[in-house]
Amino acid sequence: MWNMMESRGVSSIIFDLDNTLVDTAGAGRIAIQKVCELLKSMHVQECHIKDICDRFLRKLLHESFDPSEGKTIDDVRIHHWYEALQEMQGTDPDPALANSCYHTWKNTRLQALTLSPEVRSLLEELKKKYKLLLITNGDTQTQWEKIEAVRCEGLFSLVVVGGDHPEQKPACSIFTHCFESAGVRPQDCIMVGDSLSTDIQGGINAGVRATVWINSDCKFLPQGSVTPDYTVPSVMNLNDVLLELS
Image (cartoon, rainbow, N blue to C red; front, side, top):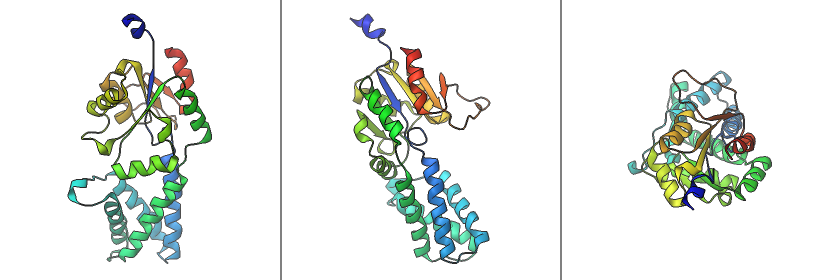
């Protein structure tokens, strides 16, 4: 019986969320466009608008958020907009404008975020044969809001949000929690994601059967990067990989 278990192949698929199952980057571009329109309507100089948005995005990229400091992620990100406006205009902006920029950006991004019908159908089909798990990095509030917005929770046996745990991907601990909670072994799983440093490195650290890199921009592997077992342009190509692994 144990030998049969050893040879049964892949029984579980771990997915990343952002830019793997949903186009977060695309939704973000739509959201920034909306903020540009808002700033224009508030008579902010057009030559400043792109720079204000770029500054916000840089702050978002390098953000460190510690919920124990008593602030919410909303507070932190409103402050990003406040600083971006302040740096560009050289004066203290109206806090209400920073607030409007943030909520326009946040709400537009959530509205634009969708699980496409094709991806939803793929997951529904895969669910019949595999145990589907989701591990997404990010703070608790932001990621659960995204999961709710795209209505995908029911497609997975387990959803794990990094912000709910002491460590996020690529740390082994979050994968171990996932394996134990879902009742699966690392060697029975594949890890599917768009980030080499978190998804692919994390999957390798955790000892999964195979890693699948979603490389939608057809990027070259950076020098010295971790090497995925498989590279596909979209999650829609996953069945080809599963056939090879069966």
